[in-house]
Amino acid sequence: MTRVLNSFKVRAGNKILDYRLGEKLNLNQVKLFFQKNYQVKKLWNGSRHVLGILTRNNVDYFLKLSTSEGISIFTKNEHKWNDYFNEYTKVNNYLVPKNHGRGYFQKKYFYLITDYFDGKLICEINGDVNNLVVHIDDIILLSELIQKMPVVESDYRMRFINKVNSWFNDIPSSICKRYKVKTLLDIAEKGVDGLSSKPRHGDFTPWHIIKLFDHRLGLIDGEHFLPDGVENYDICFFIQRVFSVLKNPIVARNIYSQLLIKGYKKNKLKTVLAARAIGGFLDESLIEKSEYNFASRFKDWVMQLD
Ligand SMILES: Nc1ncnc2c1ncn2[C@@H]1O[C@H](COP(=O)(O)OP(=O)(O)O)[C@@H](O)[C@H]1O
Ligand SMILES: [Mg+2]
Image 1: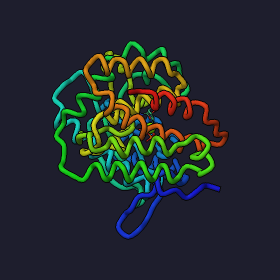
Image 2 (image 1 turned 30 degrees about the horizontal axis):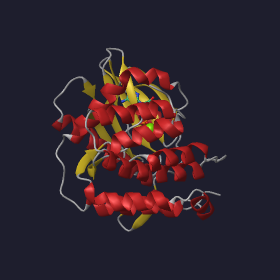
Image 3 (image 1 turned 180 degrees about the vertical axis):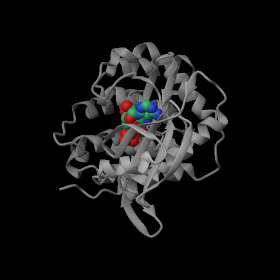
Image 4 (image 1 turned 45 degrees about the vertical axis):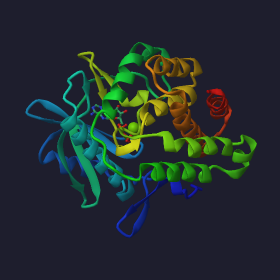
């Protein structure tokens, strides 16, 4: 049975929804709906969305259709992120899809139509990390570019700590005990005062960066965008993903070293990495065959950073 977790709840008016769970939509009906305005070139089921390639006047567009009301909230946020990035970032070497359309399928499933990025992910979720090593400088620059966009005043520290606490509370207590996860929470709570607020993409991973056929990098899937995150969140998220999901501590440490060479402060990085280590234990607890080897190694690495 799926555990009901506070970490993945989202409020919509007076309803509390889960943003992980999708429904099975009828692809034929989806096709008929979009055929009114586009040629439907391809349509498939992703994990939480129906995805597709739509064509009009010989131009391809990407379709991302939510499969529940909870998911819709996050897909709407992705629409906001696409606009935000394209309004404030006037560079042309890093791309985020521009929005071309939005609406509702069957009145409740939000969809988004954007630029189609023709290229290859720099590394798939089960892929070979060595493919992304040549992009490390660019990845860091892209995370810095995001942080240069305007930030909105808010109680970002409180929100960050609440979120990290909700991850912590959703980890099975036996695991928290066995791996002493609380020590990570103490680091995050102590360090948060030293963090400033910056915009974040929020799901900054190798499998959301596409190397376009013209060699530029395109960043997709901004569902977790915040205009007021904590600084360095994206690059720390990336490091944790490389370490524990792609299972490559060497490349993860290499990215961290590059940050130190650029003058990033160790204690600030440690604060966000500790928070992400907690997220890593939660992620691991949610998969079918949890084994905490990399979550635990990531924790040990973060703990000895000083
Ligand atoms: N703008 C785009 N252009 C081309 N392919 C895309 C685009 N956006 C997403 N994709 C493809 O669809 C997949 C899922 O998209 P993603 O935004 O990560 O969805 P989800 O939120 O369901 O994870 C990506 O891995 C990528 O292959
Ligand atoms: Mg994704």
